[in-house]
Amino acid sequence: MSLEYVSTRNNQTKITASQAILKGLADDGGLFVPTEIPALSCSLEALSKMNYQEVAYEVMKCYLTDFTEEELKHCINSAYDSKFDTEEIAPLAKVGDVYYLELFHGATIAFKDMALSILPHLLTTSAKKNQVKNEIVILTATSGDTGKAALAGFADVPGTSIIVFYPKNGVSPIQEKQMITQKGANTHVVGIKGNFDDAQSGVKAMFNNKELAEVMDKTGYQFSSANSINIGRLVPQIVYYVYAYTRLLAHGEVKDGEKINVVVPTGNFGNILAAYYAKNMGVPIQKLVCASNENKVLFDFFRTGTYDKNREFILTSSPSMDILISSNLERLIYLIAGEDSAKCTELMKALSEKGSYSITDDMKAKLADFTGGYATETQTAEMIKETYEKENYIMDTHTAVAGYVCREYQKNSGDTTKTVVASTASPYKFTRSVMSAIDSKYADMEDFALVDELNRLSGVDVPNAINEIRTAPVLHDIVCDKTEMQATVEKILGL
Ligand SMILES: *Cc1c(COP(=O)(O)O)cnc(C)c1O
Image (cartoon, rainbow, N blue to C red; front, side, top):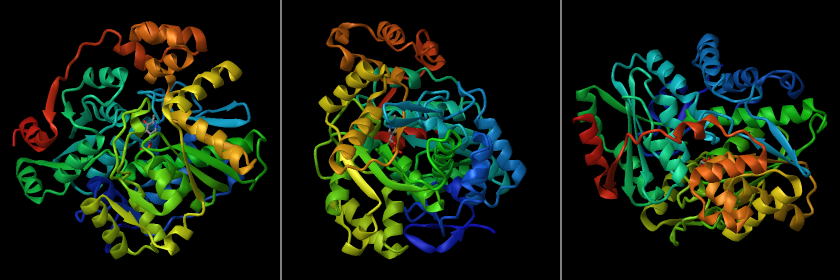
């Protein structure tokens, strides 16, 4: 059975999975969604006996129906290999009575690797299937982690080049160092004077610019996206929720069919949306808890039904969640609007024109599976310190936001359902914030001294991703104004 994709803003035109992956964003500015969410292809029991790669195949084949078995298995096996530092790929760590699903064992030590290590393979396979002759230019806005993971995934991949925009003053020192030391002749990294939303809006504007697309095509280029709006990122992320449940089953932590809750530290709403898809495929998930930092636009949305980005943008210690426009929410809006693309278009128009929209009561009723929470900077730091002192487990700032929200949710609701918290980055990626949370005496120490100290406290080996950048030379130093993003792209590509 083949599954087709439509835009959230026009569901009349249907395209294949590989075409949706190539395009990234629909021409009308909408996001691609499958015409239905498929059911799991085999039982949870059967999946519990498979390894990560096998589970990935069983899940992804339901969505990427125009890929052959050979093509899809090749993509999966090229992605989930020794780039990950554990054969489990996404291990579960039991900390107290909560299971932390560690999604940071890939090349750049953030959960973005889970999707971005496979996206280049999905994209080049899609290009071949659709006889694309142009060079594919990956254009990406990053709040820190996507950029590095995408650079690592696409570096020196034939037929592609990649341009990453990041907020010059909005990422951690280690995140910035990881990006500006990236090797590969086809990689470009640009800091912008602006925040993540500026970077994302600038990239979206270029995707929607038809004149630019024509000039690109004449010169032998076309854009695609590595941002989480690409369906080629969403689909691989569904896999680890299926995997997590089936590991709990395999280890006897849950009985077959027993419900679990999932808590996800959220920014662009990609990761938690994948959990929602997993639930709708048949994974027994009860509540989806959306955890925000002080940029709590989603917390307010789930509480009131009004999405309002008109507020101060706060720089926090969890920069990958410093986002006021959560792009992937559009996919959920489309679904709860009853797959009404006119309604979805109207709300998204209000968002871009007024910066806010309100959903109907009917739509709100369909959000019963979701609940929101948030953690302040102090609460996030306390969570890191307490978990270290009580459980001897050191988590990063993003995971700590979710850990805190999880604890508060359990306390306030009395819900004792077993819970999986998505752990989205290694503490080594945010060493300064993590170590300062544990003890203020670390505030004056230099970044790599802190890395060694974190190693001493946690007993967890320093990842290669960190050792590599200790001495790596800076290879990228372009900085531009947020209004000059297109001019910068034109210069890089020689248009
Ligand atoms: C990207 C990221 C998030 C947010 O994920 P979304 O899919 O954008 O909601 C959370 N934590 C870390 C470490 C990230 O890199």
